[in-house]
Image 1 (tube, rainbow, N blue to C red):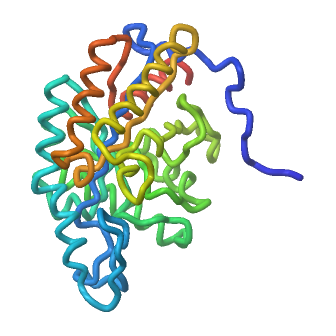
Image 2: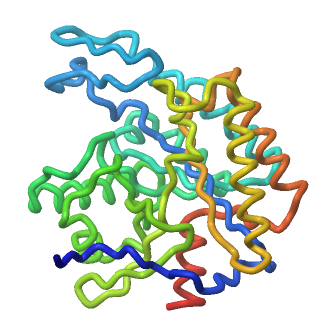
Length: 296
C-alpha cells in the first residue's frame, strides 16, 4: 500500500531548534478572530452556524443567540485578552478571518500597534476541503488584499478551519507571500515540505491545549481545568526541553477564554510560564523565520 503520508517525522532524534536565548519551549499563543465570519442567515448564508456556547441548530430563521454570542468576542473578550497578555509581555498571532476583520477593522489595527501578528484564517470561518481550485485561489488573493487594507499589513501565515483542500498548500506557495501555514496537527516542531520546488514551512497547531475544549463536554469546565492542562503540557515540554526543545501552541478565542469565568486560566498559565523561565513566547511568523534561518 502506498501513501504520501509521513508517519515518521523527526523520529527519535529531532533537530535542535536553537530557540533564542536557549529556550526549552517556544510558546505560540494563537488568538482566533472569527466574529462576523461565522455562517448566519442574517448575512445571506444558506444556514446558521451551530457551534457555539449552547449548541442548538436553528433552521429557517435568524439565530439571534448565536449572533450575540459571537459579538461578545469583539465587544468584550478581545480587550480582556489584551490586558492579560500585556501583563506578562506576551505576544500572539491573530488567526484572523478576513471578513471578520472587515467588520472590526479597529481590532486588527489595535493588535498590530501592540506588536501582535495578523495571520489569515481564511475569508470566513469555514473549511476549504471541497473548494474548487479556482475558487480557492481567488479566496486566498481576496484575503491577502482585504487584510492588507484593514490591518495595514499583509498576512504571511495561513490556517483555515481544520480542513484544507489538497490544493491549499500549493496555492499558498504559488501566491508567493506566505512564510508558513498551520493546517497540520502532527508534530511539536516546525518542519519543511517540498511544494512546487519550494521548501515551505509548516507550524503544527494543537487542539488539546485549546479553549474550544470548553464547548460540548470536551474536557474543560473551569478556568482551573484549562490552566492545569496547559501548565502540565508546558512542564512536560520544559523537562524534555533540556535535551529536546519543542514548540507548544495554545489556541484561544475572544468569545471563549475571554469570559470572566475562564480568563483566569490563561492569566495563571502565563504567570506560570514566566515564573518558570526557559520559554520563548513568540509570534508564529517569528518562529517560521527562525526555523528557516537555522534549518533552511
